[in-house]
View 1 (spheres, rainbow, N blue to C red):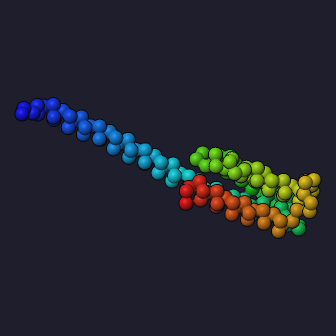
View 2: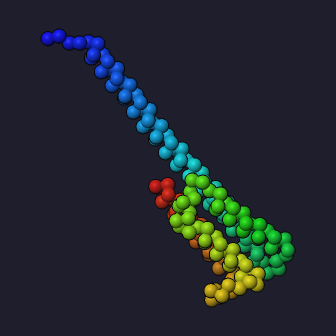
View 3: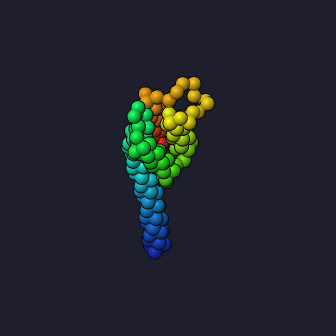
Length: 152
């Protein structure tokens, strides 16, 4: 029986080439997924930390003797929080799906109601404690949304 070694070597070489290309493709795909996951983690961490800070600064709007500076800081924090939410790239879809921008807008409306712009849908006047509860609930929900989004 005669074996054509050249044909056998060609098949082996072609198989090696296909294996190398397939290995490269699978590795690059896995690395791309890892890169996306790492960026999502970074965005979630940044968002949760910074929104907490904005919420703390917005609480200044509930001081009994609030000054113009308190009101300006509250407005600035509200605007920064909105910017934080809208400038996300990797987690934007997840935040939209769970209504995070709308919830932040409701927090802003709650603060505005405390300044004398009442929201007719609110049964009780806004309080510092009510605001704090809403911010804490948003924080807890953000952590749960992030865990789900990151498959943790």
